[in-house]
Length: 516
Image (cartoon, rainbow, N blue to C red):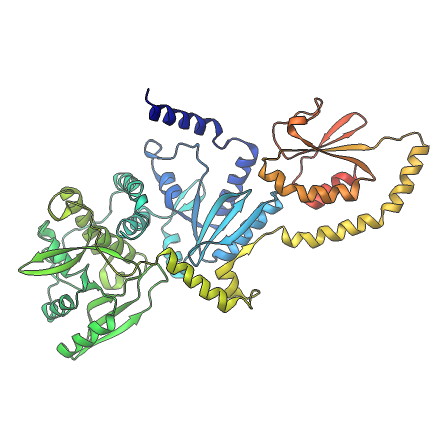
């Protein structure tokens, strides 16, 4: 066995030995709480866990040994993040934090340093549309295969994004497509070539270097499937300066007019719907990312045509943003199915020989996002109690609101010390001179213990007159105490051990110590 093979084997053995124990009571409790939260609030899961959980067992890619990573949509994400954090705190988890993610509108909840939830704010109409058709498995709502598929095609259409994920994304996409093929009914695309100015508009857009993904793009792709021959219809394009295109087009077609739709933040691009009288003839989309495309020669002219991945991501998105009044739902799915088949049949050949890496539009890099957040912080730093600041810079620790409550109880305890001393003296006279011993078993490498240590220090100050408070490393644990988990609290009274089994909140600990 080579050195590399030895290292690889050792790494796998170490990973297997020291991986997280998902069967531990604490981990089971963490998972159950987030799953109950999803069920109760009918929030909608997406991402890897969603794909895995709607697949048949034989095709699921998670083995059950991984800590589940729940990504879900909400129409009130910031408050749902705080609500979930509060629930964990109420169940006795000491280290709980809800905080804003990198992207505006995303929030993460951590419990004992574990990321238990990623919550994403979604436009209310889009959220409603997704929830109405959601899959439900064991009481949890999941995005439909079409929406999950759309997200994956979107990721594959962005070569300036995180391309290290492409292999994983594509393998999951294949499993999803195998088990949930694109559904449609009649796939006869009727001739809609009734646009008087089709060629004029195409010529103008092409001279302005637009990227085509509807109408003309489908017309060009019809070379690979004649069912697209009659697809000359609404002309969809990407362009970074839509008004420039519209101005030039109006010189050619004076009667053209437009309305602007602002789209959905970071999900669906702003766009300009161009009309002649009441007929929609074209839509110009302002890119919100860098979309992949190919350059193709067609009838002696070169066109920039959206890649198959870009086409599919946009067509699936149309299904959920109420654009179907313009496009017709079944026609969208029919075209998506044809495009998918074209890609499958020709993958690795001709223009499909490689994955396109040329892209059009500006990608919001991490640097751009952080610059934007920095500017917002400067703007809002003196308004930290405002809703807007919370939406951008949430950092919510549910234990903070309990600190003042705990300090108040500590002061009350101090005031009663003189009374406790007199009671203790009477007990001594009665012949009982023994105190309870409170053992706190900990480990220097335990994150939960490090979180609990300040609470223990406060308790030790307040109760050192009433009890013998002992903090002991698990390696030096007395033989009569048996535990494999830390932090562990147990009281010894009259030679009997009394476990503290409640949630480790200050109020529960005070009650436990007072009642001994």
